[in-house]
Image (cartoon, rainbow, N blue to C red; front, side):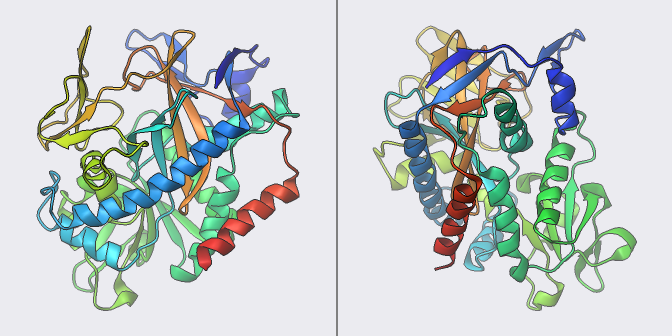
Length: 408
């Protein structure tokens, strides 16, 4: 893996905004702007690295499904979740409620196996820039190179495979209180992929979702029954709120709601997952040692709040480093993970976000930061593979082959 300096395209900001990236810069507290989308450089991966990352992603996906079953039993506590949450997650697992996508954050330096840092399994963002924006960058700047990126095609294929299992329209909901536009943009893009797959859709905010207590079903606009809903909203928050108590498997499936992501994702978005994986697969080359509540034998560690997001409240205890991020998490409990410093390239600390769509590795989005914690100020940098691109027919055939394999 190499970081290669690059000349930005003329008018790059207008270009990415026209492609849907509504926050190409990060506004600092003093009002100054820093690029979020950064094409002053790109990352060059080898085909062998991509093969390694793809295999690791799919192996981690399978391991996480086993860890979810372990966590659902309560063997590692209540995970800081409301009463009844584990029972709901177990019922969702038993029903094989479908999942669409997730993002593994990996440490990778090209010298050995990647290491799992965490799994953004419930509400991952960074999707449009991974699936679309960096693909257009590649076509504009390096049309003779490849990119590890079949996210868009796999999302469309996943919706097509989901169609027989859900009731349309699919409602797409986001939190109306967010200010950056990131959640709205992510939901809008996912809605577009569903429509490209031929599904009927509707838009809504979380605050507009209601519940008909007499008839026992969720409703959207004009009291229409909400049968299928993609929501970019954390399960741990949703289950604490008043209508969270209604998220239950119903005896009559005609009145149930299929939630995407499903309730069992509350187990995998929890940092306790890291401890569960280490418990089930001790010494595994893709994992770092991790424990709940205390660091045990670890002398250098990163403490992560179980429900934390965007690096909030993370604490680092390592030689020469004592650091704590601000935030509002931690009361729910902590996971302690072995300190493993991020690789630095040209002074930038790098995290690879490896996407999984419908259980298959789909591509990567690379972020870099100045500090050890990848937070709100991290920058997204495009990548390429040092090989010639396959034909469109070959790309389509690969996705179709994986879909046939998943159905067997």
